Image (cartoon, rainbow, N blue to C red; front, side):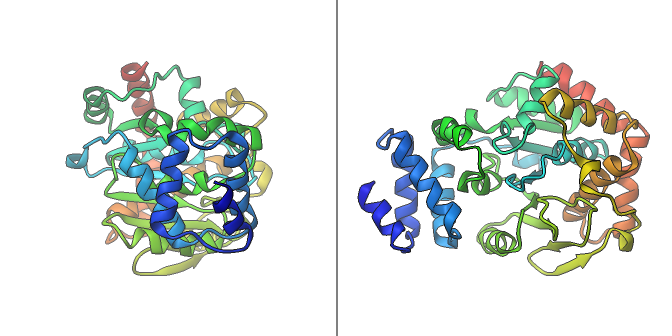
Amino acid sequence: MKQILYKLFEHQYLGRNEAREILQHIVQGKYNDAQIASLITVFLMRSISVEELTGFRDALLEMRIPVDLSEYAPIDIVGTGGDGKNTFNISTAACFVVAGAGYPVVKHGNYGATSVSGASNVMEQHGVKFTTNIDQLRRSLETCNIAYLHAPLFNSAMKAVAPVRKALGVRTFFNMLGPLVNPVIPKYQLLGVYNLPLLRLYTYAFQENSTRFAIVHTLDGYDEISLTGEFKVATSFTETIYTPESIGFDRCCEQDLDGGATPADAARIFDRVLNGEATAAQTDCVVANAAFAIRVIEPEKPLDECIALARESIESRRALNVLKTFVEINS
């Protein structure tokens, strides 16, 4: 590791196979926490390359517990985290809205590393027990259109670095890897990123596989469609900048989306959204993300129709019923 760190400190880049081997060695316990923290810090001080990102991803996918749910052609909706905004669980709520609209979802998530509540935190607040049992995951999908994969259970690397990530409390390249290593390798993905260089990076990474994707970034720094300002949506075909007003939403502000001080606070907001009791800003933000996810699956569908489907999923209480059934099956 010493030679690797010297190389990185001298502003050199890792090759794809080199990055792959380093991550394998982390899992094998060949590096101590201080060395892992130093490696992580390098990628806070400079951008990660496509070769490095894909090498790390290769290692994680090779070491994962594979889960074949391809017959459902599911979507994952996820943000990289690391935007420092401490929003409530917008992507996770959008997953239940999309499932309520009739589309299969396989959500891959973890505990919050840089925010109060990650997807796994809000799941646990509802009494959900995480599992690798494929029959239960399939039953969950068949019964309520959604299954949840807690990342550390499916990849030992995520578990191996969890204490270091938590101790550092800042975004790391593992935030970047999480969205790329859903063990299911979903057919569709809506991914939120916290800056434009990452949007470009993920576009290149996704073009190497068969996932149909949209990458979103709100230009004031959110890793999701926050409706606080202009946002960009990139696919393998187009890049478009939208304003909230251009797609029929009012603009909101940062405090409207705050996730609170504890996972319980964030879970209460999450519940209010699905119960139809949240503020307009909270609901609209979830609806917007869900709508663009639906459009990834059905790109020929007009955006206003996708928005209407997402909103109706909440107003009809179908999204809430999905949550209730999901909790019953997975508790």
